Length: 195
Image (cartoon, rainbow, N blue to C red; front, top):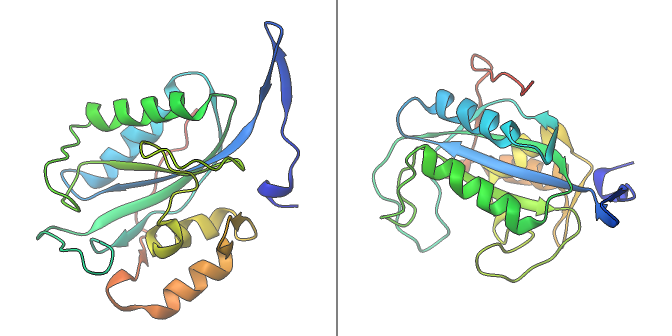
């Protein structure tokens, strides 16, 4: 059974039924102490109530990425991870938490595709689809990104990325492409799971 096959958990709270969703985050950092930035972000995600930790991928290193036709400013390689959690929070509350964490780690948004201390994307939020420009779900470019697919496949290879197929197959195809989007597992780097 995959995460997408599971029935949502409905819990009564204050007379309301809250639905539990599986959420997938992609985190990256290429400025400052990259590993420490990722650790701080993972800790901050789970410091407040509303998220239940499921799994964290191994750490990967990847060159900067931009869609075809876009220019990538000069910058160093990223460390990337994927974190999977369950939540009963609404997507907009989770987005607010993500933006606050990025801001606390001095994320600057001056240059498109530029370097950053921290980048957190919400890749999927249960089976919710949204065209909201502030939070498009599923993430519209996740299927193009080896740095999302390969770490995610380490955790949930059989999950389906809506509209694109099985995560494990997508990751395998991206790795086979190689080239500038290839990712490399950093077995020498590890993160502490949230308590």
